[in-house]
Length: 90
Image (cartoon, rainbow, N blue to C red; front, side, top):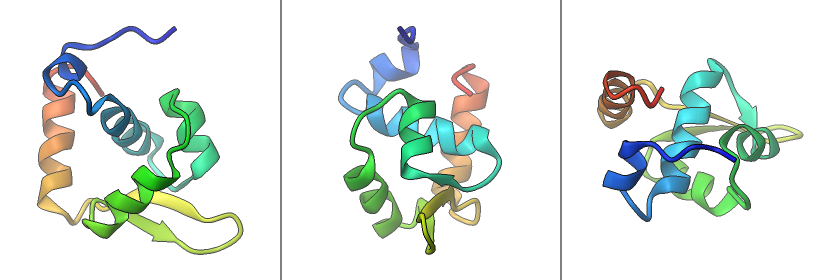
C-alpha cells in the first residue's frame, strides 16, 4: 500500500490528481492511461486525464493507444512540479 504524503493531506480530496501528476512528471515521457493508473496506483484515470487536458495541464498524444504527458510550458505545471520536489513528493 502506498504511504500517504503530507501534500496529499493538505489537498485532501485531490489525492488522485496529485498521484497522476506525480506519475506523469516522474515518467519523463508520455504514458498510456493504463500506465498512469499503474504508476499512480489509481483507478479510472480517464476522466481526470481528460479534465487535465482541457485545462492545459496535460497534453494528449493521439494514437493507438492514446498517451499523455505533462505540459511543461504551462506555468501552473512548473509551479506544482516545484512544490512537489521541494516537499519531497516527487
